[in-house]
Amino acid sequence: MTIEDDAPLFNPIAHSTLALEAGIDDREPGGLGLVLVKNMVDDMTDERRDNKNTLTLKKNRQPV
Image (tube, rainbow, N blue to C red; front, side):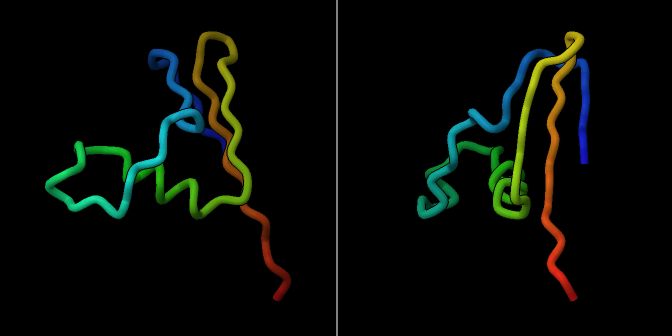
């Protein structure tokens, strides 16, 4: 899946991983969606192309 937007430059791959062991009151809001996506996909690439953020997510299919 490829997601593209024309928002300001943002590379979610370079975004630091949250300290999930910290209590909910000790963490800043946001970032849990990135953790979820990073753990669900097999490959994630990001590039800035034509003044747009382009994020590609790949998931390998398992044989049935």
